[in-house]
Image (cartoon, rainbow, N blue to C red; front, side, top):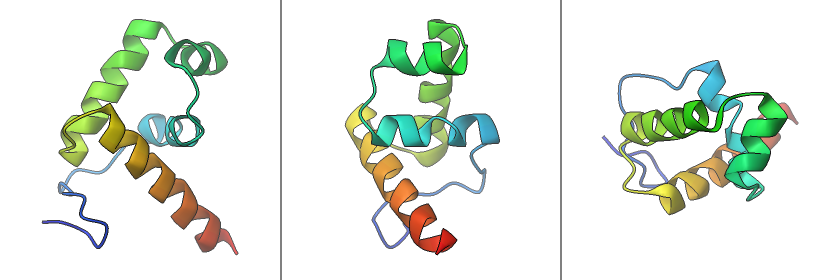
Length: 80
């Protein structure tokens, strides 16, 4: 099933560890910068990214970054 932005959502939800990556991805931070800031091994970071794309049924990193930007934008409006 696709949401209004065209993303195919799964019944499974992103974990909090996945969601903490979204603002960094939305800001176009480098992989090493994100993993270092969060204190996670770069390989663990890549595993999270792959898992997120699997859960969201996204074809690649560009789609994930687009999703992250939409997610962060919607969260900002939600907080207002």
